[in-house]
Image (spheres, rainbow, N blue to C red):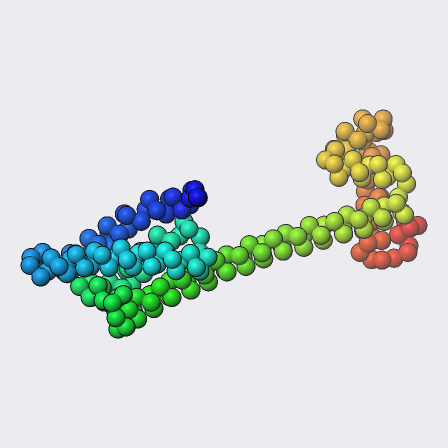
Amino acid sequence: MKSSPANRRQAGRRPYVVAMVLGTALSALGPVAGARAEAVDATARAINDMSRYCSTCWRNASLPADCWTDCTQEVFSRLLERVAPDAWGWVFRREGEERREFLRAIDTVKKRWQRGRKWSAGAINAVADRREQEARRLREQRQAVEQAAEELLTPRQQRILHLSFQGWTVQDIARELRTPAERISDEKYKAIRKLRAYLHEGGEDAQHG
């Protein structure tokens, strides 16, 4: 089965993260000699095992594959603060404080990323809802104006307002209707005044204005 581009990117970055964490851990262990060399090997194996374990956790938690490497790196950073590197080899060997710290770090990172995803989804939905509400409000207002125009205005006044809504200037409308621009401007003003009185004041007198 072919891996997705995100999985390939994540797999490509993992050796870099493992190497970086390994370098940090080894520097904390000090010079390599004798028994210390065995501890270094155990730490290296533990890092690889923990990295694979983390990836499985991120997959089971349905986190995006392109964030797995960052999550794993954060787990190791937290572990470095709480557990000595030469004790990492005990994480999968026994039930002890090392294992508990490792699992706590995974749980903390997982929940933080999940909260971030929920917040992002909520923010996107909120923006989408506001836009939808605004679009609906504008549609309702336009429908109300069109209905009022049909009831109150002459066909000529409706034509003038329709062209105005499309961006035509008074001069453009005057040329189109072969009418002086002053008269177009006056009819436009009267039509808008009628609509305002009808829509905002709700007065029946607007029909006679």
